[in-house]
Each structure stands twice: as C-alpha cells, then as structure tokens.
Length: 254
Ligand code: 5BU
Image (tube, rainbow, N blue to C red; front, side):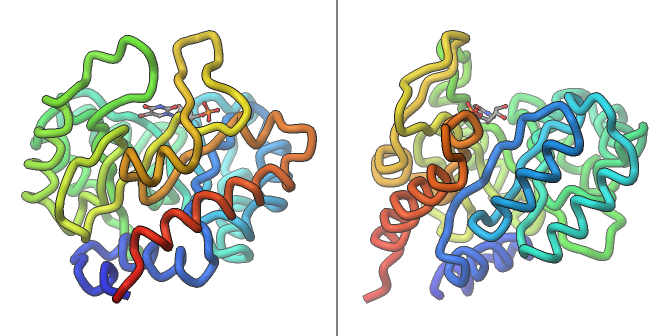
C-alpha cells in the first residue's frame, strides 16, 4: 500500500496495514465511566475497529486490572489504544502527566492527543517520556468539532508545520479539514453520526461520507452514534461499511 511506504511513523505503518486488513477505518470513542462496561463493549466492538479511544480520567473505578484487560483485548482483537488526554501544559508538567500519576498513560496508550497551541516543547517533553519498547504517537489537535471552537485556519497551519518537524512521533491530526499534503500523516475526524446533527451541548455531527470525502478524514471517531443505538453492533457495522468504502475509494491505487 502506497501510503504505508510513504510514512516514516511506526504507528502509522501499523495503522495503514491494519485498516486494509480489517477493512475498517473506525475509531470507537468509548466514553463510559465503569470499567466493566468499557471492557464489555470493547470485547464486542474490537473486531470491527482499528482504534479504541478512551478518556481514562472519567473512569470511576480505574485500576491496573482495567489496563491489563484492555491490553489483553487489544491483543485478542488487534486494535490500538488511544487516550484522548489533550495535553495542554508546559513541557515539564505534560511529561509528568504522560508517564506518571495513577494512570501512567505512556505505559499503555499507543496514541495521545496534544493541543497544538502548546507548540513544540511539549512534543519534545512527550518524546522524552516515551520509554516503551513499542511505538508511540501523538495527534495534534488542529481543529475541534464543537460549536464556538477558537481553532480555525491557524490551528491547521500550525499543526501541519509542527508535524513536519517530528514525523516519527507525530502520527497526524484531529481536524475537520485537510491539514497536510503529506500522505504519511493520518487525519482523525470526530463529530460523526448517522442519525443526529448535534448533542445539545455544542457537539456538531456530520455523516461518515462527509467526514471522509469532504473533510479528508482517514479515520473517523464515533462514540454515541454507536453506543446509544438500539443495536450498537449493527450500527457499528453500518458506520464501518460506509466509512471504509469512502476511504478505499479515496486511496485507490491506479
Ligand atoms: P461522540 O459521542 O461521537 O460525540 O464522541 C466524540 C469523541 O471525540 C469524544 O470522546 C470527544 O471527547 C472526542 N472529540 C470530539 O468530539 N471533538 C473534538 O474536536 C475532539 C475530540 Br479533539
């Protein structure tokens, strides 16, 4: 696959290969607060996604056993784990948040997010914290999906420039529009739903087709659109078919 050979990022090599093999470009956002519920959903959905995204700090009963179970499911179903931490502090603090505290994110999260407004010293701090023998990546938040976000063209421009400086550690972007012409980076787009246009709290949804074709998403992030459906597995499969057919069409090699 062409994009796999065009990336220097170890996480992206894994992801490009996994998307093609599993025929899915879905990242499932499992924003649940009880570890047993997360584990249950992940075991059901794991075969159909490339990434499970969590917010570890909303889990009420977090412990090491939860992480051990997630890693077991990761191996069983073959996906990556994404902690959407949205680091946004000075380098020294970000480093402690990445490697330490009760969560020890660097130990288990293949991907994390970083607010692009923090610039480059924070990326260097996260790189210092990367001691795992496994590849680790960071996604730069270029734009957000909710109403009233203050990140616009400037975020996109900054993210593109910064990514070029750290291509082995920056895997790509969270964005609502194209950030880079470099095919080695991966764009994630959240705010995707089939039956809803918003959540009444600012979130704005587009369809999988709009996200992949018009907004340039490689991977779509879907949460409540699946988790709150009457039949979540059936809904996940609908997202999977619709999003992957657009991705495959866009990445067709002649
Ligand atoms: P939803 O249930 O599909 O609305 O969940 C979307 C997830 O993506 C949720 O975990 C958010 O924290 C995350 N997200 C987002 O919605 N929009 C953004 O711009 C960013 C992250 Br960055």
